[in-house]
Length: 581
Image (tube, rainbow, N blue to C red; front, side):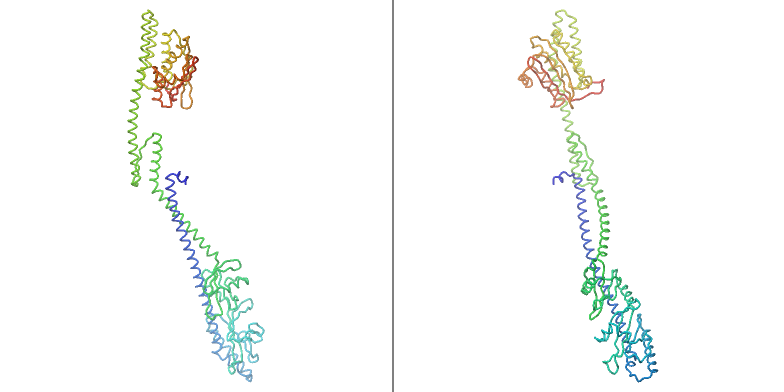
């Protein structure tokens, strides 16, 4: 929550747009994928069930045709009658009957519209001539398992598969009975078809399935479209599939959707298999396509959202930056947003009106403060100038009465230079160099009045002389050092030293005298205005007026040893050597 509060409104807008887009896209993705998965699985099961239904129907129709053909061959000819005749007939008669039977079988075979073949096995082996194609001796089959099974359980039809010369055949055997004794079998008529014909039927019936399996009632695989060899466990799993109920089965470690179809009272069924990997792979590819589409939609939506919200965010940024700059004193008007929202226009207009009002108020306050500063400066200067002027004029009068014209001229010349500096410069701030010259003239005047009691030492680097301070800053402090420091000593002679340095953004000036010093109580009285000495207080006030309340005067003193006045001023430097501040 803390980090969220620190997030800019621009980022919050972008994040809200992204979050809204993400929620919509994720919801659409989840709904679509769920729907597509369910739809794909259901469609797959439906198609597989339909495929297995068609396959088993087509295969059983094929088998029904084979049954009809073998029945037609058995009863639309005289095969059973011929085989039922006794053995008293001549060999020529039997040969003629053979030819008749062979012709009948050929006619039936020609009428078949599916590829089949017939083979007749007469029980009596002495009545015909065998060609081992359409008619073969029973000795060819009496040792085969299907014949033995038929002897144990006689059926009208017997179904089985056989392999001959690497070809597999599906066979149906119809038992022929004696026309005069229906309990006596006189022969067996077999109809066969190549199992590869089933492959064509299954191939035409499948719908993108991995395998179609043709099963008999014993759970034996008659034919597998893929030709795959399944393990015994897999065959059991295939046989256990419930008809008409598509399900998922595990066959030899692979998963398959399986659908089984059969018909009532049918010996055969068809199982259709489709790999779950293939189905889920299609879902996976659809997911990738959908993700690509959603990413494209999200990119377009973000671009559109950025184009729509961009001007609003830009205006908000300008408004926020302008507000931050106003804290630093820089007020800037903001252009309203074209076709923007009413709320944002109201905020911008309100801010612009506020800036306009503040700007006008600042101008008024600056003008008023400037006027106040000038009045205060004039008042302070008026307090300083008469005090010094009266004393100097008295000295000039004194030297004139004593007929000392050189001293009078010296005083008048230094006095004129002193006041030229004080009055000629109309700026509030002057270079330190000008202030130094100012106190030099002042010291020269005071030394003439006090018999050279004062020594002025200036130890200030030349590169500091271009810094600016309020004018008439040093003179009151030097005057205070003379009259309240040096002249109050038992031996009223002393030195005043001026030094300076810069520290950070400030200029520090040190005025040190070796006079009588001043007590802390006296310092407090000076700054509290409890004395008649107003020079120090006026100077401190002017420093604060022009340079700020952090500037001003502080004292360090030890009675009967020294007094040091420290002036803290802003480090404003004038780089034009030929002009004053």
